[in-house]
Image (cartoon, rainbow, N blue to C red; front, side, top):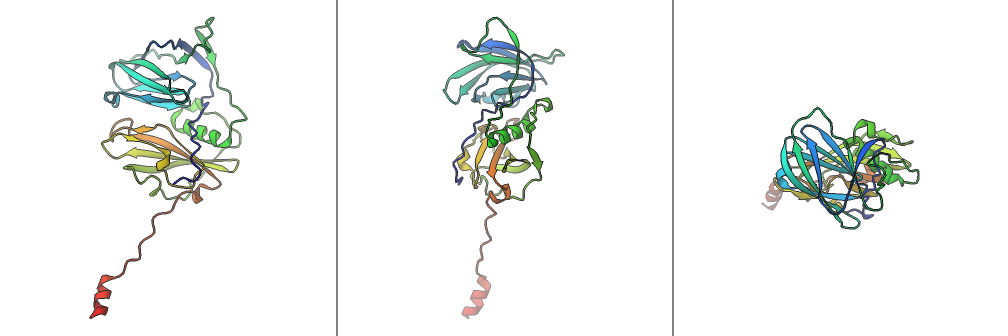
Length: 276
């Protein structure tokens, strides 16, 4: 098991380094009505560490990915109004979104930012939004955030973090990483900063059941680990794949457990011959 109980960087992945106009929507406990066009992706900024509850019948119709307080919502086909439940992992507050999947459109819907009572500037309905790159963010969080952006954020949104270098994938075995779940495990990329390394590992559900992901299921001598999503959908659905970002102090090649050793079993045939 993980020795230094994963300081679950349920990351304030303060994430996205960009500037653009955003529509502000105030959360007043009334479900927020939003639309997403087919084959388009819409960004919803929340600035909270959240989990997302998605009705199972939407699995093949829409993809919703959460990254550092931003939801990336992409529709594959039209669908009727459906309710999403967003839960603030720090306060357990529930935020309701009634999402509708519209048809194809040449007009791209603008991003929205859900704001709360103490955040709303009533003099503006639109504003420029910027996430500043903070120098005091711990290295493991910087690495995890950077890795997550490389896999899920648009290229223009990947922040430039001085000192981060992509490295060759370490020589590691993944057979013992999460053996209790029926998942395919594939290492994808790795980066290094200030003596720490992060490895981005893809997890794909091989079963027809939804799987709940828990860092306590991971085996290795890791400094921290963060799942992009906390569940995996059934095999064959758009939500059957996610990433886990594993941070190690020092080389990652020494943090993953090796394969189980081959058992040196006795040769039964030889034993029979000797007993004659």
